[in-house]
Amino acid sequence: CRDLTDIAIKAIATSCRYLSSFMMESCGLVTERSLTMLGEGCPLLRELDLTD
Image (cartoon, rainbow, N blue to C red; front, side, top):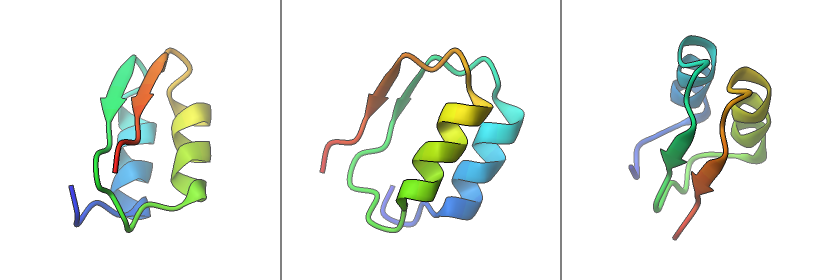
């Protein structure tokens, strides 16, 4: 997921409201803003893997 960006995360956060688990391993282009978007857009999110 090296090419995943905030723009892609925004699309996920706005269209996957029932997302409960998400793996974002080695996503160097993703910023803190993405985490906020996921938290606000995916209220059922319980597991977020940010392993590098």
